[in-house]
Image (cartoon, rainbow over all chains, first blue to last red; front, side):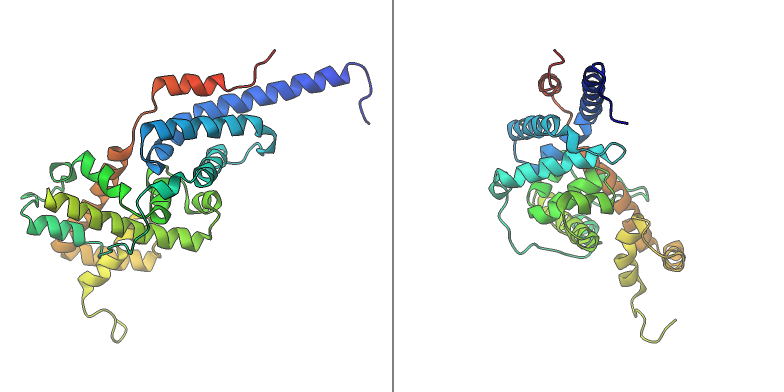
Length: 195
Length: 81
């Protein structure tokens, strides 16, 4: 059974090199999507770039521990979120606070009170909120909630993938997502109405 | 309707907004929400707003990766020889 011919070792090395190259190519193809989450996990573009390079450096070294056929994007994000926690970047963001959380209609109602509601039926969010409002409001959401919003709403991960990446139960993902969106809308209401 | 079940149907509809958009309701709950939405422009406007808001948030916070970062990541690959 065991290959003991002199050709076996070079062949094994060649196969491994081929698998590694394939892994690296697939990981690089996902870099844009990984960056989209990374960029909002940290405060600055420079931090996001550092985090991406550390993540890919670690991923390329640890490629053998990736199981082909499983979700490579989730595997990369798990490395990235762990690195982010390890480096203490998370703590540099907004301090944990008792978040302001209102009902799901709160933002619309506040905009309406402020006279920014549309006169027609079609809802045009972009007429009432700016991109900066959203970026700023998201940065004010405590990180436990923000991480889940980033993975599910921005990164398109399933609840199950987000649970695996963050190493928390799926029920916690769902409750943090639900509350996190409400907190985000409360922050948006403050941004938009005080503007 | 079960006794005591939601004196305020709009409050209940508000509670169903997120699971509705996440497609995380049972068929019966979904039907219940849709019956209410059909007859309630107050809730309908807010549901439309929420759906649009999600798209807007996603677009607003998405930033393209700098091209030179992609090159730097490619440089991290293990050299073949």
